[in-house]
Amino acid sequence: MSSREVLIEILESSRSKMTAQLTKIEMKRSIYPLWTIREMLAHLSGWDAAAIEFIRSLMADQIPATPAARGIDVYNAESVAARDGLTYDQVYREYIDAREVLITLLQKIPDVKISAQYILPWGTQGSIVDIVNIYGPHEEEHADDVANIIAQSQYLG
Image 1 (cartoon, one colour):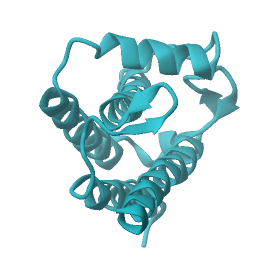
Image 2 (cartoon, one colour):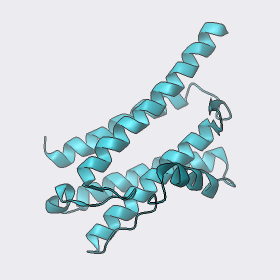
Image 3 (cartoon, one colour):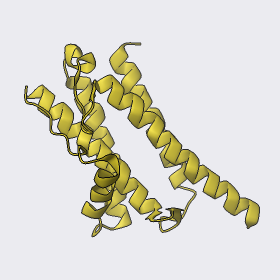
Image 4 (cartoon, helix red, strand yellow):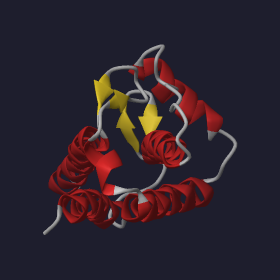
């Protein structure tokens, strides 16, 4: 398996793990003190959107923006707030569509740009490999949190 295929597998696997959990939980359910399931998906969509713009910039031989340079918490809040007027279905559709676009871009970007070092969306140096190796486990952590809430609900209910 090529490194590109491994990266795509990481993104597909984490997404599959999350979508399996989403069929078992109410969209308005609180997941964290200030976030519902919908807001968690808006947060994940925001990061996929940052990666999409990052890769598009690289493919256009432009310097990628650093939308989270003011801090990850600020970016998270902005990502959720930007989707505030959307319904759960709209947020979910964006969540699914953004990952599809990200994977399509990963399939198209030249090999040399996958492991090259750049300034990442949050302002540190790294590569597309680093982005995927952060995004996959990050989404899986959220999927585990959803699974734990489901398990607790079944235990209590």
